[in-house]
Length: 275
Image (cartoon, rainbow, N blue to C red):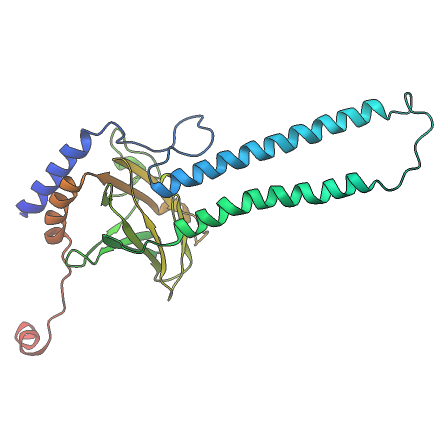
């Protein structure tokens, strides 16, 4: 019996259970984005709120303009229609105003794209590999241990676990840490999506895509494959536990033994094993 991994897992669970935001997943009748749990998602939410103000103002303006035109220029109030075909001022306005609006949108949009692209000085790296139909994870900074995370069947769920979102092994990451995330696939196209983190990146066979995350609060966060990858597409969720740096260090010590890579033996050792 592996005592160290079990002790580490228990200590990790006790520490994580003290956090008030342990189940930060979707809620019934929820509207809008999930609560932001990373620096990137916070900026995405801010940009979304800006767009919401702009499109609401445009929609109200167009609605008011339509109602005014319908009332002011109806056949009853305007029996003799105007034959005006051009108005220089109006044509200049309806050309320049949309350009100004697009510039106002483009500046924060490009800033957000560059911010979310990659981090220059990552404190740790994690690799996610899409497979048919589950995710594998590697921690190259910690003796390169790896594990698979498969969906928990509905009949095996316990109280508090979410249907179609819970996995047997969780991705565990520390808060307040700049984390480089490498994403690829071993078979077909997948897409690694974690809404609360502002992450959605394709997993392409033979290609390594990169993004980053800095988690701002502890809790359990859920995601799914967002690329139609086959018959098991809806059964490869992502469950991420964000914990303190101290709890993460405890978990790593147990995980390095529990999920240690088994290197194939070669040479004399392999020959002795075959005998």
